[in-house]
Amino acid sequence: QVRLVESGGGSVQTGGSLRLSCALSGPTDNTYCMAWFRQVPGEEREGVAVIGSDGSTDYANSVKGRFTISRDNAKNTLYLQMNNLKSEDTARYYCATAEWWTDSVDEYTYWGQGTQVNVSS
Image (cartoon, rainbow, N blue to C red; front, side, top):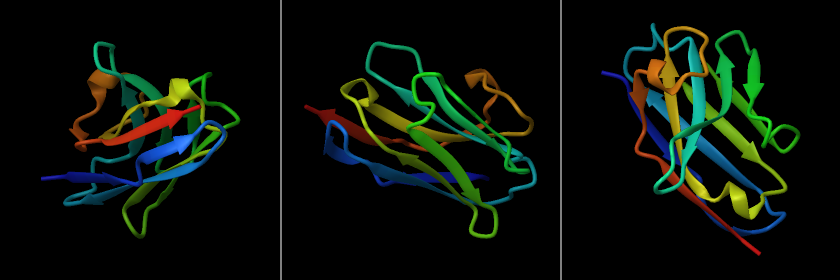
């Protein structure tokens, strides 16, 4: 059973930075694609960034140039470096894995419990 545990969330002011981590344990055979999603209460979960095991990446337009996704396959850890944070980045952030390259939330198999990010002015 794959288990994902996020950490690194917290409260920051506008313009600040945070680095989220996601530790993956269990079988990793079907974790080609890893991603960060975020969700605000009452809204749908949205994709933030995706990374394949080959290092290819994709980002939501709203975070391009500010967020960087990376993964350390040796440590089975996914990261999200978030710079120049805005109030609209406030959400609960989740990491997830998928067997193939996808940005569709429905195709992600395993999910963490999430970590809260609050950005205030």
